[in-house]
Image (cartoon, rainbow, N blue to C red; front, side):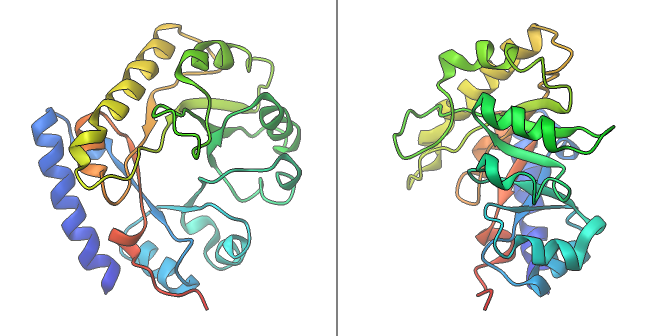
Length: 229
């Protein structure tokens, strides 16, 4: 099985990265990004032991959800338009791209009674214009402003690092996000425990793990680039 072989190699790299940082590999959750693969490949990931699946577009994502459903925890990692929340929120447990109050308001409105949605605040640490997310300087005030949305649980921060040949170059991006997370945790906000860090992808996850990532988002290195057609 393609995914199982890839997963074994990735787990070895995570273990090595954790050893360098004096961490336990059990602290790191692997999220399989399945947007470029078929339903069958997504199922293969679950069968290999992956319990977290992620999509960044709703087209095709709901088809996977209908087939796999509760066998996995579902993550939405892309830009989420408020008008699309109603049609997808029943399927998703995690949102990695909370970056505005209007989206928090809509999530709070649409989440089923008695349930919460676990959200990461997306931070544009690198300052790239092509990336979404709030500025690092705005993180604390933004998070404080969301206490009026009880269905939105702010569990952590998320960022995307620049894609570079040498992953070591993006270490400061990850370390800065960790520092921001620690600042939020120090606030002891009931609505924002903010214990988690969603950072690191196929090309840089080892550095992210060394810097404290608790969720890493892996696509090509884990499930490949199989066509969904």
